[in-house]
Length: 309
Image (tube, rainbow, N blue to C red; front, side, top):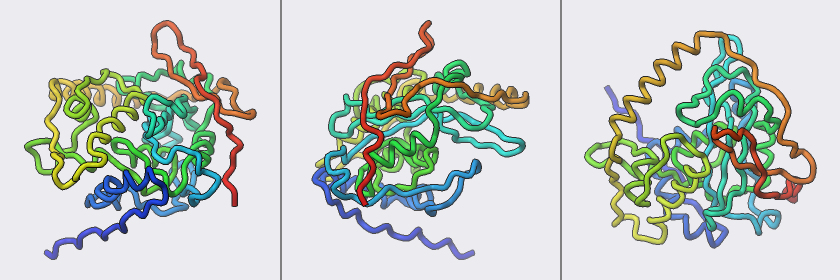
């Protein structure tokens, strides 16, 4: 049989910002990956199962000149159901850090799923039913913030960042994705996880439960080790972190248990909290289950700074 044609070549990124020019080689290396188009080139206007159309950020202009032009993102997702329709990537938490100042958190908040939650994936994200019961911040709020922050020139950094963008229903192709840059040492196409990258490139271990601020920051710091270097001379093979097989086995056990529990009727999540529909969004830190189930604001940024036409 005739082999399938190679994926179309993606045009090089032409940066208009100084930060973009520094990160452009890594953007272009990400775009050169054979899987880039299938993961990032979704048609604008395509609707997700809940009916939300994918949108593209606005063109770069004076409205965003003082915004961070490099950001790192990580999102947490839950599985939702409506009838027989399954939504595997419903946004439940979004975290974004400044790519130039990783200590600066631009947003970190829980997000209320619109559908009934059938799997909270607490084993992965640490989020339980009670954490989402009184959340008012929605997917639409998260998209509104992101589209007021980023332009078509913003470099979005992350690990498997296409999943984060899909959960936001945003199409964006100026990305640096560690999942497409690195491979597992000793394999042909094995994808390292964020723990592997953290140990190998940042010399630090990761917590067992995902924390989206930490994950966004870790992906950024790991990839930053290659910024400004000759990418053809970089070592893109990463060894597995210690304990990989044990964690993989535990994850498989969780998924089997999750599938069994998902046969029970899901419960609707609703309620009110997180009052930030006024003049600014409160960006929040998620507090883990340590006797304090509240969220607290740590930054205010105007929400009504709409792009100029």
